[in-house]
Image (tube, rainbow, N blue to C red; front, top):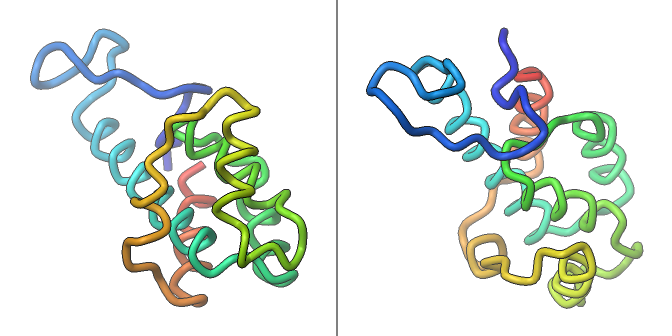
Length: 134
């Protein structure tokens, strides 16, 4: 399968209904949007449920080389996987500081912390799905 996010940054989709200036088809755009949604759902779960050692290992194994469609998502993933162990109670504060230091101060944290998240098995399946998109 063709990678959903073949560049290192976000793609701007504009142009004719069948393609954008970079030559991406509607199918490519659909894959991109699907990947962005899966990324968001994975991050929601990681932010809301935190990372025990097993989940951290799974996330890093499956997604450490993943090219995030949204640069913000990549920064959040980097920060959440580097969060100190046992920081679940203060994870949100840690992530705000970490992403701000990396140049991303304006993240909508409510979207990640207050929306419904997936179960552990569903989260791992989502991570596998992102991994397989590459």
